[in-house]
Each structure stands twice: as C-alpha cells, then as structure tokens.
Image 1 (cartoon, rainbow, N blue to C red):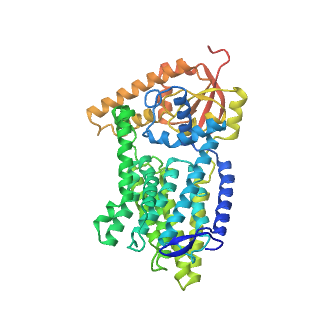
Image 2 (cartoon, rainbow, N blue to C red):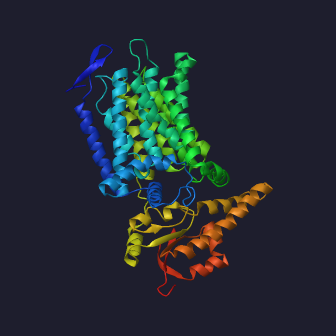
Image 3 (cartoon, one colour):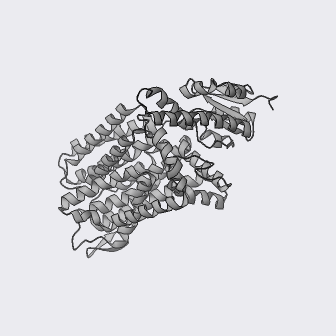
Length: 507
C-alpha cells in the first residue's frame, strides 16, 4: 500500500491508507446513491418505518401491529429512526445514511483485519476494496437497507477473522478486541433470522477441519455471538412474550408451510450454480486464498438457509449471491497475483462481469415501486389519505402509502395471513388434520370480521384491491364486504390492482 501511516503487524510496518482504494470506494458510493435514488425505498423497509412511527405514537407491537419478524427487526432500524427525528429528516433518508455507515464501517474493519492477518498485502490490487463496496452498495438494488443486506455487510469482518484463524500461529495471534467486535457485528445476521447461522457454521466447521482441532469452534468470537444471542432471546421472553405465545403459532400455520412463494426456484438455482462455477474457475488459479474459501462457504450456508425457508425472495437470495461475489472477487485478486495464464483469468473476469450484469439488470435493479401515474392520481384526489388494501402483496400499500403522505391503520401490512390460510384450506384440503383445518377456518372467519370492522372504524379514503387473486375474489364475494365496497368507486388501475376512492356522498 502507498501514501501510508503505519502500525506494526508481526514486527513489520504496515500501510493502512490506500488512497486509490478510498477514492474507488467513494466513487462506488456515489454511483450507488444515484441508483438507489432511482429505485427508492423497498416495501419491507417502508413497512418497518411505518411500524416504528406507529409505535412512537403509542401502538403496541404484536398487539395493535402484527409483524412476522421478531423484535430485533424493529430494533435494528431504531437508531436510524431516532436520527431522523433528531435531524427532522425523512426516516427513509436516515435509514439510507445508517446503511451506508454500517457498510463503510464493515469495510474499514475488514480492511484492518485482513491487513493485520496478512490476508491482503502490498501486492493486493487496489480495486479489491471498491469491488467489495460494489457488492455492498450497488448489487443490492431494490433490497438496499433490507435487514439481510445490513446483516450481510456486518458479517464480513467475522468471515475475515475466520480466514485469519486458518493461518493463526504464535506470531500472528488475533487481538481479543478484534474478535469481540467482529463477533458482535457478525451476530446481527443471526438476530435478523436464526437460519442464517449456517453462513457462520459452515466456515467454522471448515476452519476446525483445516486446523484439525475441534477447539476452533470455541474461539472468542463465537462466545460473543452466543452471549448476544442468549441475551436477545431472554429480552424477547421478558419484553415480548406475546411473540412466542401468539405470533409463532401463526407463523407455523400461515408462513412456514407456504414454500416457493416467489415461484422462481429454477432461475435461482441457475444463478447460484453459475456463480459457484465462476468462483471455482478463478480459485483454481491460485494456491492459497483463505478469505475466498471462507466466503464461498458462507455463500453456500446462506443458500442452504434460504432453501430451507422455502420462499426465494430477492432479499433472501442477496446474502448468498453477495458472499459468492466476494469470494470470486478475492479469488480473482489472488489469481492475478499468482497465476501465469493471465489471458484465461481475464476471460474469467469478463464472464463474472456478465453474470453480475445479469443480476443487476434482470432482478434487483428493476424499479419495483408504484407507477408515478398511480401516485399522482392519489395525491390529486386526497392530500393525506387513509389507505386500506385487499390483497396479499405488501407492495400494494408500501411504499405507496408513504409516497402519498398517507396513513395506514391495518394491523397487518397486507392480507398475506388470510390469503395463506385460504390457500392452505384449498391446496391441502385432503391432508390437513382436523385440528389444523379448524384453526385455519376459525382464523379466516375472524380475519374477515376484523377486516370489515377495520373499514367501518377507520373509513379509509383509498382502497387498493389486487386484480384477479384468490383472496380478493373470496373477500369480495362476502355480502358484508360487498356492502362496504358500495361506498367506493374506481379512481385508477393497472394490471396488478384497482385503486378505489370513497364516493363523495358516502358517509
């Protein structure tokens, strides 16, 4: 590294300032800001911000607001929400600032760890760090600031520590403070969703196997993760016992049984296999690349966790793709420094770039928010509309509600729970146990009554109804709900949904 201040690593001065890398990272951040401004806030983050606002107004989580995720999801975004209130800025802006700061801090800590460990050196190409920044800030696209995105970024320092463990000896022992900080940062991904622990477990097993020592799985960083996880579980039991008492049984009946929700498993597998193929071709060109090996195992762990959950959403796929990309970028750097067949490696890099373009162009970087015409039609009709939805897609109400400066009073972000109950009653009609069938039928009937009461109590100005979906047809066939909808007339529509406005003479 050049233009450097220094500190000691293994008795030798080590550069810590790499201006080309810093400038490159800054350029990546600037590019990502432009891209993210075009894409906007994604649906889940918009809903979480709304939850925080409603909690700040006195509503109770898991009572007045039904959220499938444990409370850490809300806690994760709380600092950004508080920052927004302190600075009097939009919460969406604060969340983006928070996400960039988390990613940059993770990159800085990873840089510190890899330099101390000798995983990177003066021979490391300066573009490695801007490439990692691109994985953090450009690759996510429409899943930017999702909890999986934040958790993945926070995990990288721990993966660097695991790579260091593979070569640790008496002369290069890991400082306790680095293990503690990396462990704490890495715990975020587990607190987001427990099954993402596979992304830590797989590399940990590999380190233990390579070191031929089971004691490797009892290092300080894992104790830190375990302690944080135990403290979190205890806090949930104390502060939100209702989550385990009421929410978990509902998730067990309505969320977990619905697999292949995205309907895109074939292209997902193709993308992942292509990514592994690129990594393999690059990895074969160098003798040693421990950080690449660790991150590809994390990628496999993420993919296994995603497949086990069975949904296949873009934000579930991102951690696997991101760590696979990081593994490939690190392997490319190692190959260019050690391999003789430079032309072959260049073709591999081109191939990897094509795959990256495929991810950017066909999935995450496609605008998925509401059409501007829909937003303008609602704004022209009502300055601050109360909005309700009939449909299972969270994208019906979010981020649309926030874009039109509206309010959203429903306990649920959408009708996903009732839609899943209906789907199970139809698809599993012959296989459901009597107990499960009774639970689903009771839930569905109670939900419909609550839905009608919601319209009666809050008198929404705008109702967004999904087009030609099983749940919407079922609810609209209910006589009581038909009476409710007589008070509304179409305002605007597209292929996905119809936006109704309350009639001027409706009381």
